[in-house]
Image (cartoon, rainbow, N blue to C red; front, side, top):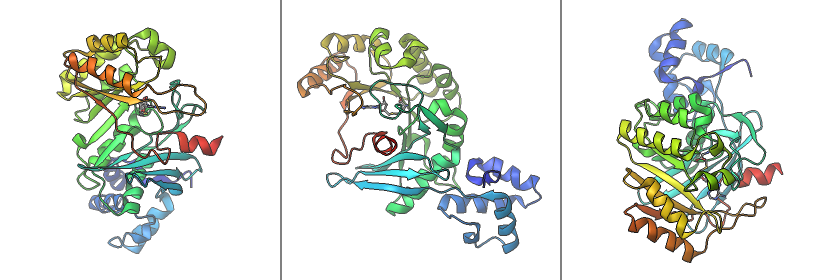
Length: 343
Ligand code: SAH
């Protein structure tokens, strides 16, 4: 299996090139691409290809798939949390969320993570490996099949740091946006990063009008250093500068994610400092009451403190929302299911 090619790891253009180079007709690549994105799991299902071609592809290539190891559906709001098993046995998570504007999937981009954020469950065992472009896509394909409804929005906010797996993530974005594939518009896709500055700059030049979310979680380097080791490499000033350049180049509004942790980053002073940091930028602040993770002793801020924090930002004309908690009854925050399994 391992020396065979997963055809979902090719972009559309690469697939065409592969067909031409191996002496196959170019238009067949489009047919295969369509089948793959339809969620077939064997070449035999590709009924508009000749038996010979199917056999020849089967000898050189394979079609990756995911198994549902666990599935938990919230009785409160229909959120579904999947623990998925990859072809090599590794586990990742995806979440389906239902909003008025459509169905959103949250996908993982790595098995584990090496960013080391102090409040996050995904990073506890470190990074095991990157996901390939096809494995990121498989989460969308197979879960869409499972729920039997069209997924209209994607957030790259599951396990992993998407910009630490840059090339595979870009390939995935191209494929999922492709008219012959799932055809999901870039404007319906959000990518979240802990602030890898060089990759943010690169992304700003990809001509992909996705929404960039930046996990800020602190108003200054001192606090950020305590909870996000990446902050020692890229200072908050550099992250903000990269955000400004991203906005300038793409004309897209940035979302700042800010997990409110009691006594760590949720004081009135912190809110004031955050306001002056982002004031005047084309941005939105999303406040997230931190989710309790067993191994960590961070507590979420009180409702009163969250309200005070939000009011200060709004008084300073910073657009702010508090993230609604979905799937409260199924432990839907990311990394926790896999963590439960690998412990
Ligand atoms: N690596 C990317 C995306 C993954 S996580 C990033 O850092 O942005 C998606 C969001 O959930 C990030 O903002 C992350 O900081 C946040 N997050 C992780 N653990 C959390 C927790 N226990 N409570 C609240 N938010 C958390």
